[in-house]
Image (cartoon, rainbow, N blue to C red):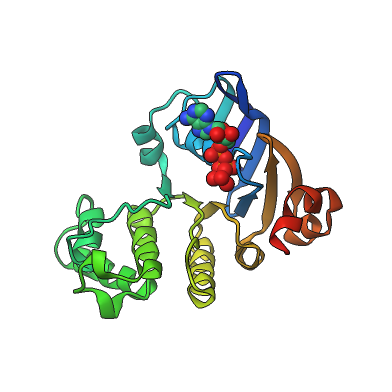
Length: 238
Ligand SMILES: Nc1ncnc2c1ncn2[C@@H]1O[C@H](COP(=O)(O)OP(=O)(O)OP(=O)(O)O)[C@@H](O)[C@H]1O
């Protein structure tokens, strides 16, 4: 059963065919990574899934339902959540307060406090709970953002280059978080450049090139694919 499926999805920006007839599936329970050279159309594809861009043609299905025409908030309500690269946290508030804001619409009292504590532990931010979010390290900010994105217990988590700017240790810890979320049943679609991270988390990898699905398979199949190496992996020495 697919949690997310696109059928012949198309997006044009003027004369530029940025998403070109994309048939793509994230199976329920899968961690799926989307890679490809700069300008391949990864961000655009993400924004189509979120409803921030409207598609020019084709369909988007979520858990079997056609969401092609739905607004972003309707898709979020269905269980899609996203962590973008740009900060989505309240820099002037404390770490704990950020999580409180994300959680307080559906939890109160002791269960709210318990859930904040659980998230702080999960995000490796327990010692930083009283710090202002703006004073966190780059990696910690990314984790807090993951916390904001998972607060509403999404079924499908979209991650846009979650490890950009992280140290190798932070990247590895982020991979462990993704794996733990996945073990709890969250399906994940991640746009990522870091091939070590992709190797750590991905069940399946899709390569986009000029807006088209260029290749698809396990990380080993993708790394062994000379056509892929020619367009992308060669550039990043994977
Ligand atoms: N709003 C827009 N209007 C016009 N062209 C756009 C718009 N957004 C993206 N593009 C173009 O669409 C193409 C794909 O861009 P996109 O950002 O989706 O690629 P990407 O694979 O995410 O790249 P990167 O890895 O650099 O983030 C690029 O040529 C880009 O210039």
